[in-house]
Length: 75
Image 1 (cartoon, rainbow, N blue to C red):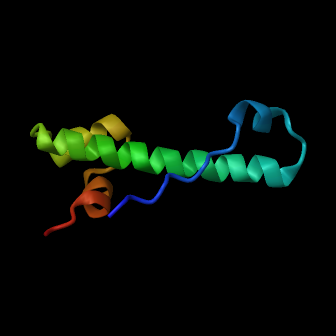
Image 2: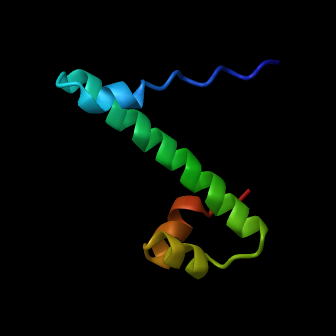
């Protein structure tokens, strides 16, 4: 089974200077999705390396409860 292709992200350099709100808003949405993926990746990496929820929260600038609630998915 093949993984679904990653969605194509807009050309951010071009999007920054565009006055069309649709272009700018799509770029903002794409950046938010990228930020969420990067955060999840690095939180998982930190947990695998033994970081506490408090240490992760401190690095992200959020409360321990917030990061624990968002990422502590019991299996």
